[in-house]
Amino acid sequence: MPSPTLRTPESFAEAGLIAPERVAALSRVARRYAVAVTPAMADLIDPADPADPIARQFLPDERELQTAPGELVDPIGDHAHSPAPGVVHRYSDRVLLKVTHTCAVYCRFCFRREMVGPEGEGTLGPGELDQALAYVAGRPEIWEVILTGGDPFVLSPRRLGALIARLGEIPHVRVLRFHTRIPTVDPAAVTAELVSVLRAARQTVYVAVHANHPRELTPPAVSACARLTDAGVPLLGQTVLLKGVNDDAGTLAALFRGMVEARIKPYYLHQADLAPGTAHLRTTLEEGQALMRAIRGTISGICQPTYVLDVPGGFGKVPVGPAYVTEDQVEDPSGARHAYPR
Ligand SMILES: *Cc1c(COP(=O)(O)O)cnc(C)c1O
Ligand code: SF4
Picture 1: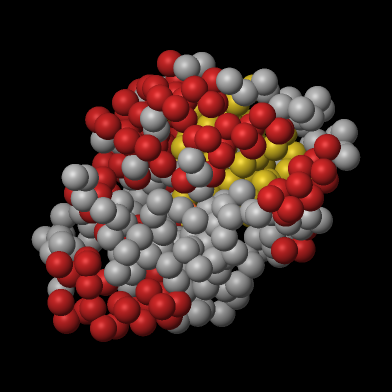
Picture 2: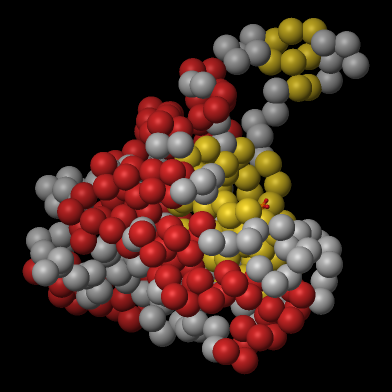
């Protein structure tokens, strides 16, 4: 019997991940925001290390109940751009399709933390899915459908296959992109059935794998990624910059190199969004820019993601530097400035 996902502070204490004295306080947090830690992630946590970067991502913290000034219930403005159930249409050529609000794990910094969870908005019902697909089918400018949530890979391969088949009937949709944390947090869920439904898609399929610390790239996780790439599915990496998890150049370099070694192309490094109760996990933009500058000078170009900020309020994602060009000068990777005619 594989061990189950841990879903309560009591179970974290029984597994030795938190001190029993903290159960009451963390239960208050768990009533406010969903919690779940998969066996694969629980195994990675070192309870003896109070600064463990895996624990910081998944175990609840008393500070989550404090909302800092500027934090927003809907930090990236999903609701402002939702023309149909589960659809977010902010850029003309692509839509998000949020098929489910459940995840295998609940990340403490989640930008959709007010929407995800077992008691969140749930999985799209048949009528809602019909409306969402009718919206996509009626708009020829939609070139790409980004399946997200929640985590689309928590759906059974059968359901996912049915959805992929219906999307396959929309000729102007050329690319399906899945955003998921499953390959690292529950690698065994990347089954032969899941791989075969992705392989059967009529459109080009990309999978964006969310990972934040090099320790998440365990041998089973790397094998799960290999099952996808061996089936012809290109992998992108997305990472959230998190204080006390990956906010040093050595950790980011190891993560992005680990991704490239696993055939995952680092795509985005996200500035942590202004989700409620996440201030203790957020860096400043200046800290993020300094980290990007540090890795630009030292590791391969194929290991470099774009550092992006989702402009609060639903205005879209933009690269946030650092900038190397000023007036009539350009900075080289070592920080020296050189003249460049304009
Ligand atoms: C992040 C996001 C996308 C995807 O943006 P890319 O830059 O293509 O990765 C699309 N739509 C919405 C609403 C988003 O938030
Ligand atoms: S897997 Fe994604 S959607 Fe789910 S809790 Fe983590 S960040 Fe949020």
